[in-house]
Length: 392
Ligand SMILES: Cc1cc2nc3c(=O)[nH]c(=O)nc-3n(C[C@H](O)[C@H](O)[C@H](O)COP(=O)(O)OP(=O)(O)OC[C@H]3O[C@@H](n4cnc5c(N)ncnc54)[C@H](O)[C@@H]3O)c2cc1C
Image 1 (cartoon, protein in one colour):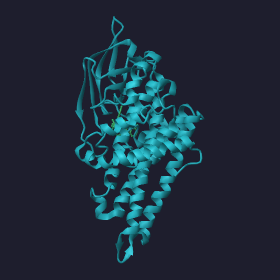
Image 2 (cartoon, rainbow, N blue to C red):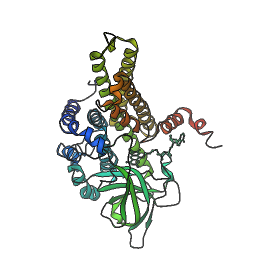
Image 3 (cartoon, rainbow, N blue to C red):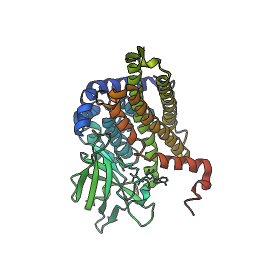
Image 4 (spheres, helix red, strand yellow):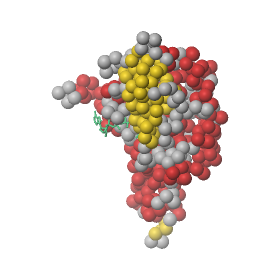
């Protein structure tokens, strides 16, 4: 359903992504989930549709759209296939959007064309084995050499598109301080770069997740994005748009689960009555529908606020955190409720809801866990008091 502030362009985008998802993603997702394999053909089609650089300025070869459009694309795609949507998010929001927002003209000219066409797959490396929630605790180091190049050593983990990516937007420490973080564009062919384990996962199984290893990777200075040691702000700002757009994945999952469960409640009979006549079934459906609508309003409000630049800094972060915190929990619960309404069938792979519930759970962990999002919100609400326990 449209929200009053969606533009004609955004509505058309939603329709075309919906058609794409039905035609290109729906026929394959069950099998790809089963064998844990990526829909490369579908991904490349997104390039043909001009969606891989959705937030990049038109002058840089992108679609020139904003967070509302990107969230709509996520919602429509994830209603069918959340895995491909997660890989699309890692590519378009975590890698391409960051290059479009922060990189130099030369870097954009070098990397964006192939990333936007789909010839190259992008990813972003922030998390490490010892630093997930505590992202600034990263240990990967980039040391400047006498010839001006950087030598990167360390590893990243849980990287979406890690096993199949070509270009990575990598954060690394260039000094001893917690905030001495710099960004480098790393290509998979660079000497000393390798990919480690590909993880087997509970959900999002058609979105490859893996480790990246850096052993004396020599990266030219020209591949450093921005000035040395100044990446924290851009990294955090990207987390905000990531949280808004990933909430769109939760919305898509929940919407389809509600549709499937409602249809089932209209068809399935027990005790000679449609199960939709039972008030306990109605309670699940109505609560799911109301919570979904509330999350949808909150998420698109956050996206619109982002696009209009109405909120910046910590206020914008709190808004994004609220949208993701609620949407992620909502989608997992709605997935569980849909399974319950479908009874035995809900627990089997005859219907998509068990896959969608498995996929939904990831959004409570990736891009900031529920707990970390609550910390962000509490800090804005309570100020220093929120950190009293941490400071002893
Ligand atoms: C499928 C998948 C894809 C991912 N894709 C990417 C990617 O593309 N790029 C990338 O950089 N990362 C990616 N991640 C990593 C993801 O962002 C991290 O998993 C997430 O930030 C949590 O970090 P962690 O797993 O180390 O958990 P931890 O930080 O170890 O947390 C463990 C538990 O402790 C809790 N906890 C931690 N600190 C606090 C606190 N201060 N207060 C209360 N509770 C706390 C957490 O909420 C959690 O419940 C991905 C992860 C997954 C699973």
